[in-house]
Length: 54
Image 1: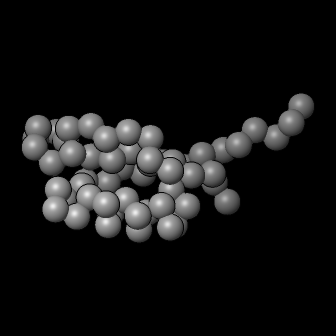
Image 2 (image 1 turned 45 degrees about the horizontal axis):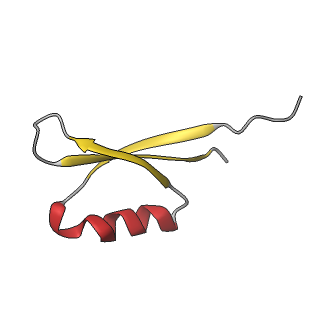
Image 3 (image 1 turned 180 degrees about the horizontal axis):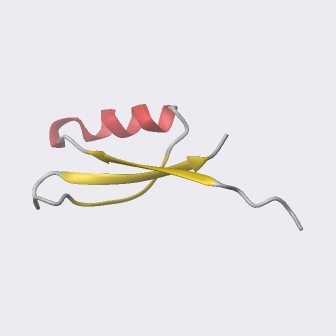
């Protein structure tokens, strides 16, 4: 049986005026964006990311 990839996950609040910068920084650290959903307060969006465990 082949080794299965194990993942770690992160959720981060996104600041509307700097969304690209925030996501680019996390992407440089190896994180892949899964989705963006409204935050619990309904205003600030939250990004859900994953990357392989090391």
